Image (cartoon, rainbow, N blue to C red):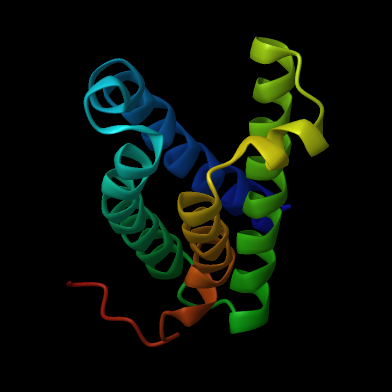
Length: 133
């Protein structure tokens, strides 16, 4: 149960940050710079959020094995993919296939790589992470 809770909190932090950044990216950056550039500019911010949130998870659950922290990351990934596809359907009526096909090839590949980092990040922190940092 604690793994489910940790994965849910990790998902909510990262999804919430991405949702908030969309309010800057979509109305301000996309018209000025285009979808690809806007999404690529958002990526380092999201990777920083992923790093912070995954470290927070590792610090909070320093006694967990890497496998258990990876399980929380994979659960968070599943929730993120479901939320993304659900929003695409609810907002634009796009099927999962249509949503994936609509992604920019460059920023879409970068996004896919960031999803892999998102899933693995909690397990990448050392189990002996200092609680003072």
